[in-house]
Image (cartoon, rainbow, N blue to C red; front, side):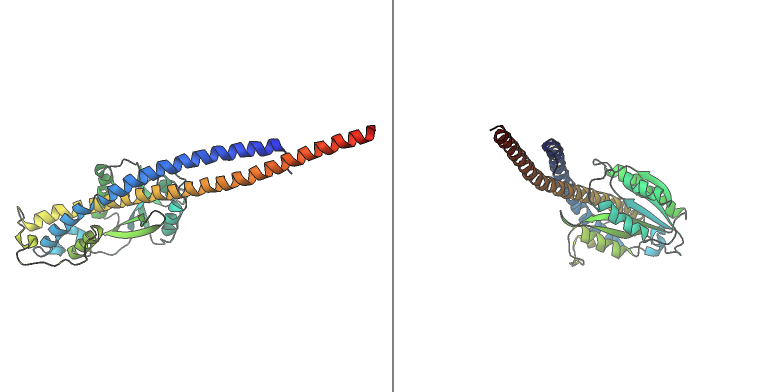
Length: 296
């Protein structure tokens, strides 16, 4: 049995660990709430963009836009969204498993230091890496999207895909993958936007409704030319917000689990300390009684 001094040291260490993990749990819970609110705030924007693209889809020739032109896929372009910091459970590891399943040639643009370290460690083709700040704005994420779109238009990559942790609830974050470019059709873009906005997949079009009354200046094709890049920027930003909510949720759960384990271990150590202390007292009494017996 360990000495009481060693057990006291372990108890003190576990108490400090429990205090730290509890504080980290509270911080992650606060950040998680803000991240969820930021992710939900994009729904009205997605709804309005879906209405505009839905009206445009009936008035333009889709095949004319370079985003809609399909070509042979030789090199995939992938945006990998991870966290900058650890202590968030298996969140990043699950994303890395998804990356390791990619056997075809691919080039990566990474948001988050953990992802950049993994791509460099596994000697994959890293085009660029960007920080994953908690306060990342649309302008910050727009740089990533525009960088990959430029690679696509120049022919360096034949697709633009994104891999990120999809937030479902506080306990569940699922690694997900989505192809952004080339787009299948404007109608599919509208369907995705309506899904993001929490609307029905196919909304009715009443005669004389807002879609039929929309006027586009200078013309529908020019508006579509400007709107599709905005859609891509918005999609990457929404996935970054989703990933941030997933990160804080996973970290909160991991820290709560660590705190609960520390509490349980503290109880076991306290019991062990009391047993050791009682054994020491009993041993001292026996020694005193034996000494008195020997002297008599």
